[in-house]
Image (cartoon, rainbow, N blue to C red; front, top):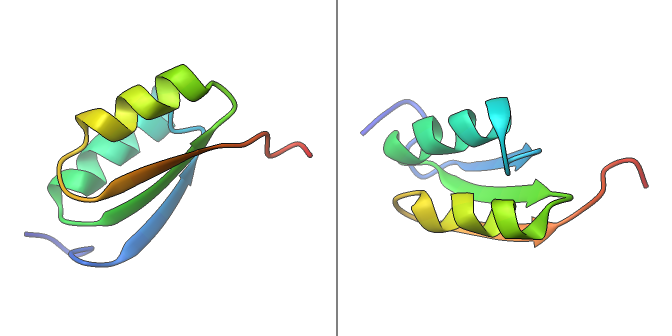
Length: 63
């Protein structure tokens, strides 16, 4: 797999942009993902698209 195989990675802003790209790349490398975003619909979409284990939590990191 990859350098992050079976490691837990937390990604904020995972619903779009760099966070989404990181989620896809790291899932292909075997990471177990915890994804957060303020936009629940997009965050869940990204979690569903990832291979392996990925869970999503709606979160506003400003608070």
